[in-house]
Amino acid sequence: MAVNSVRQDELQREVPKTETLRRLFGYMLAYKKELARTILMTLVTLAITLAAPLMIERAIDVYVANRDIEGLLRLSVFAVILFLIFWAGTRACMIWMADVTNRVLLTIRQELYTHIQSLSFHFFDSRPTGKILARIIGDVNSLKDVLSDSVTKLIPDMLTVIGVAVIMLVKNWKLALAALLMLPVLVLCMFLIQVKAHKLWQIHRKKNSNLNAYIHEDMSGIRIVQSFAAEPEAQADFAVFAKEHQTSFVDAVRVADLFSALVEITWGVGGFLLYFIGIRIVGADKIGIGTFLAFSTYIGMFWSPIRNLASFYNKIVTNISAAERIFDIMDTPAEITDRDGALELPTVRGSVTFEHVSFAYTDEPDKLVLKDVSFEIRPGETIALVGPTGAGKTTIVNLISRFYDVTSGQIRIDDYDTQSVALASLRRQMGVMTQDTFLFSGTIRENICYGRPDATEEEMIAAAKAVHAHGFIMELEQGYDTEISERGAKLSIGQRQLLAFARTMVSDPRILILDEATSSIDTHTEMMVQAGINALLKGRTSFVIAHRLSTIRGADRIFYVDENHIVESGSHEELMRKQGAYYKLYQSQF
Image (cartoon, rainbow, N blue to C red; front, side, top):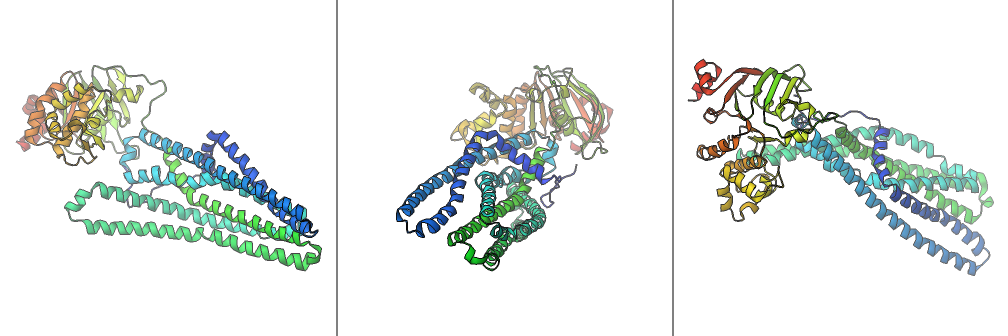
């Protein structure tokens, strides 16, 4: 199975930018009423903006030239009223778009998180958790300005440019062409810059993902780091990741900043051409002072939104790579899904049948982890799986819960093909306890009842008592309401494992899977919980993976798994009499 480490840049499918933008802005169509209201108000403020230079022209060429103080006063009062409308409208647009943008980001983040939860173990096994977090948090946050500015800045700026160009062409086409002469040069240069900038921002996003992954991995393993006094090595590694992150950012910003410089240069040249052509070619005496001032204002109004559009374009180039990474995850197909017409699995008796089951990871189809495995388990049987590490024991139990799908063959539970039933209905009847003891931040009560929130107080306590966890829980200051972290601070490894065991038991599963479930419990504690385990195993089909052979001697059958298949099976006594692989393993331990 191919694995992407914290030191490797993630591979990503190349998708046309137009497709990514269309998909991103498609989320805003769910808020058509809010957008229509914002656009309408934007048009009002835009009309006021475009009218301002015309009022200046009229004030100078008409009222000042004719010494009409009364008319000038009326125009000033009208201008103040328009300014107040402009201020209120602009403020309203910002508030409305902030609301829409945050709701869109919430939708995208929720869809991304929901989709990630539907992906198979293969997805999570093949990449660091920190890289997934970077997409859910950092990449989604990067889209905020692009979405917000698309209405509050992009639309008014585009309309402003078009409106100003039309007004200038109507009033004096020669001056207008002088002002617009540098626009084609600007568009061509912006296109060339964005090609380079987009690639650099993609690299930066990947380096940012690597840095997030390393920090998450380092913090998760901080006990190992400190126990080996490996802080200097960790700091050196962090410095490398941080430097790569900084360098990629600086490289991208250097190219992206060319947008602003380019606009300023073309703006300056355009202004020079306006005055040069206006004075030398058209003739200053043929243009009124008000008209010339109006054109001077309009050229500022023309190039200012051009600068804003360039800035927005820069934001798109900067952040479209974040959208690409988000949609890359969303487009990752869920390998384990409900088929069309999937049945709700009723309460099962617990028979499990493997028929010629083979399995290989999807990215390594020629490397079989299991090969032609067949067996039949009766309801209520306890099956122990033993054998060397990597033989396929955990893969067998993972296939039962359909954490992976078989490559060939069939798995049936009570004559139901596991691939033909709804996943949720299948896993609700599974109780899985692994050697990886993970607790959630919250109370002990919330952790025990995690898989069954509607469990009663009596059921929760009964499960805790069955695994001998009730005693140490009641010794805590707040008992079942004691707050714990995911690391289970203040609890021993054995206590954390007992809580995880109680969590599995309270769900009352029909099929129980214990994958090295007692590996972190000391021998004395194991003896205490064994009686409770035996009581809970009654009436349930159970699969127990254990390297301590003393814990599985009472199993109904023992499967010795090696080289991708079951080498031998039988009770403890039968396998000892055979003096085969199990006998040799048992002799090596005792």
